[in-house]
Length: 507
Figure 1: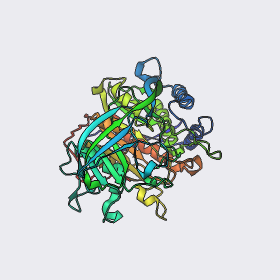
Figure 2: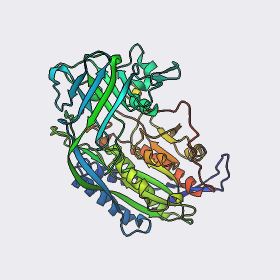
Figure 3: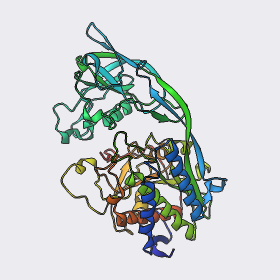
Figure 4: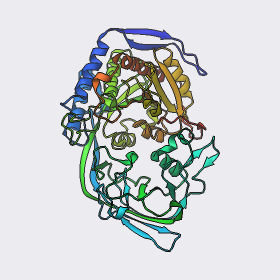
C-alpha cells in the first residue's frame, strides 16, 4: 500500500512536536472496506450472534485477518483469541414475582407472565440485563412521571435514596420537547439509579386480555422471555419494572421483588486482540465489536440481522487502521487493536477485557471505540423520524468529560478530514457500547460515530445503505486521532470530579 504523510502543526494548550498523520493515498481502501463489510454482513456469518457458531466463525475470521496483516498476537501472547467465559439462562417466570404494598388496606400479589395476554388484565414485566437473582424489599416513593429538567427546575427523583422510585407512565402535562429524553423509560431509570433509588417501577393502566404491550416495551421478536447472556458471577443490575394495575401509582407504599433464573448453562465467546508495538511500553486501545443480533425468527425473507453499520463498519475500519499502522514507522506509543465479543448483550467482551488487560493498566493511555461508522446519519434519534436529509458529512466524537485534554487532541485531528465533526463531552458512556467499561475504569475514552438512522437493530441495516466514501473519511479521522494520541508528550489526566452540567445524550 502507498501511504501519504501529511505534516500538521497541532494548535493546542499543550506542547506537541510536528505530527505525521497517515491517510490512505490509493483507491483500494474503499474496495477493502466493501469486501470486509460484505463478508461480515453476509449469509456466511448470519448475523454474528454470540454465543454460537456464527459468532465463533466471525472471531476466527478477524484473527485470520490480523495474521494476514502481520500483527503481533495479543501483545506478545501466543494467540489472538482471548476467551471470555459466558453464561446463558432464562427468566423463571413462574418463580419471579412482585408484591406491591399500598397505603390502601389491600395489597396485590402478581406473578410475572411470559405471554402477551395478562390474566385478569393485570401483570408485570421485568427485562433484566444481568443474569443475577434478586430478592429485595423496600419502601416506595412516588416520583411523578420521572422527569429531571434543569430548565423546568424539576427533579422528580429528589429524596428517593434507597426507595423504589414509582412513576406514572408517560410524561403527564409536559410536551415532548419539554420532556426530552425522559419520554423514554431507560432515561427515567438512569436518573433514578443516579439518584440512589433501589429500582424503577413504571405504572401503567391494566391491560385487557386482547391488548398488546405498549410499543416502547415490546420485543421485536414477539417474545418476552428471551434467553439472556452474561458474564459469570455478575452483580444484579438496576431493576426496571413495568407494572400494569388499576392501583394509582401514588398509592403504592412498598415493593417486594423476587427475580429467579433457570436453564443456566456455561459457554464462552472470544475477544480478538492484536498488538502493534511502539517505541515506548505504553498503548492506545482501538476497538470495535464484531457481534450482532443473529437470526430473525419467523421472517423467511430477511433471515438474519445483517448489521452492516452495526458493527461490520467498525470492524472493517479497525482492520484498515491496523493495515496502516503496521506499515508506518511506529514512534511513540503502540496500539492494541481489539474486536470485542458480546457487545449486544451488555458490553460483556469489553467488560472482561478491561478486567483482563494484556498489558499493565498504567501502560494504557486512552481508548478509541468505533461503533457504526458507515452511514449518513443524524446526531440524535429524534431527527431520524423527520422528513429531512442528514448532513452527509456529520460525525460524532464523544469523549470523557473527565479528560478535557481530549478535546484539544480531537481538534488536532478533526481539521485534517473532510467531515463535520461534533465534539461532545459526556459524563458517562452508558449509551455508547464498548466505550463504557473503559470510561468506568477511568481510562480517557473517545467514541467515533457516523450518526443515527432508522435501520438501527433492524434486518434492513444492509451494505447497500452504507456510504463508503464517508466511511473512508471516518477511518482517516481515526487514524489522525490515533497518531496524535500515540505522539502526545504527556499522559492524559482522568479526573472524575470534572463533569459537564448539561451533557449531550443522543436519543
